[in-house]
Length: 68
Image 1 (cartoon, helix red, strand yellow):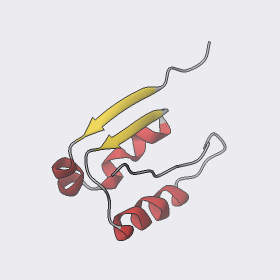
Image 2: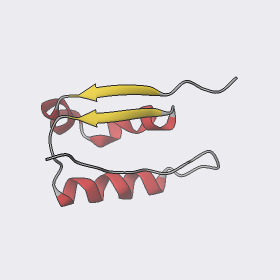
Image 3: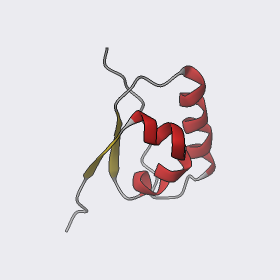
């Protein structure tokens, strides 16, 4: 049976307070993380850098998008 895909909504204030590292486990468990603000280029760079450090054989990729 296929794993279920989950979606987690994170207020930007919580993202700023807790940092991205607190959400890496969610991403590893097939969870889409939605943040209610557009991230800065520096914030996106940290997410990509930290994610690349945690790559495993099951890693399917990371995608960053924003809506304006």
